[in-house]
Image (cartoon, rainbow, N blue to C red):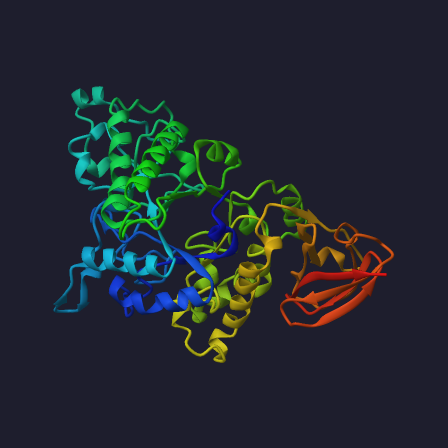
Length: 501
């Protein structure tokens, strides 16, 4: 991978709306770009800001987004080439041309070396999606759209006066065992469709659906100069679509690389998935695929197994994102109903892991505050509400300056001691550029744990210096076993600086 900015820096996941009292539009975001750059952000992934549908609209998206933040799910897209009406106003009567504002925002981000990545929603639309009238075969239909027992309808069922083609009967996606996203309609990609007692019908216009979504992606690149896409539920879409789409959009990006458009004629594609079929997505051409880090954080045995299996650097690493573990970002008043694990997802200790693994690291909205407030609003980092901000900035600085983190080389390190199960330890880098990362993931202090750093040393018998890049402390050590005492959810990022005699 030649993109050094991806190896060195961080992507930030931004929700345009956060609560009913603080709608953020693009012109209001512009002052935050300098702050983004300061803390090491070089790519901005923006959740959907498109017009959403009205049919079956959810009035609350509880436990997924902050209460009142949206008029229904932002993933119930009505028009993929639009901007949500609520973002068109600075105030009740001050209309702005948000398309121009977004284009201006992208230009100003590019001037600072910050890429803009959009959410690409291909698995589903709103139930009242306009093209449903012209391409009803793009969708699936049931008499009871909330039942797994209700059979799929086909075109032939029209003769029986059954509601094939009726937008009110478009099937809801069945994701993670439920029909939660009831204001969305499943598209018929002929792959991974909701269960039913009969086989789903084919989509005779699948080719037209391919063309439509490729046109959507090309539109945002050609008209606004966006730098790539995070692809929602990418594993549920046929591999052949992604091969064709990614190739076409990268060609468009190369064509529009001049002037105020894409920074360097490149377009990155990121695949969202929780499936085990990640290699297929890599083969389809994705630059990054969601890693298993977030799913492994609170089971150290599972986490150590995952760290030991990492291959390559085409991974997106994060501790949470907009809907993986959203309970960790609900208001303080409902924290009593949330697990301690979810409450600690914003711990700098976990970010120290995410930011030092091979791949692209992503922070989410409000990660330093256990809330949905925008990270970049934190003006005073001494404020207790922003107490983690300084730690995050320091970790990002280490990621940006340490060559040992810029490649794919990584080895896990063995640990011994009564509480060694609480310690995550690994080596990054090769040759003279080596970092040792040691993290106490537990909620208890740990002492007298010994980490085997043999692979980091040129000789077992020589003295060596470890510089803690987090605190600046310097330690002189001898021998391959490193004794560690760590406070709860704290960490060391050691640089092996010198060995002698």
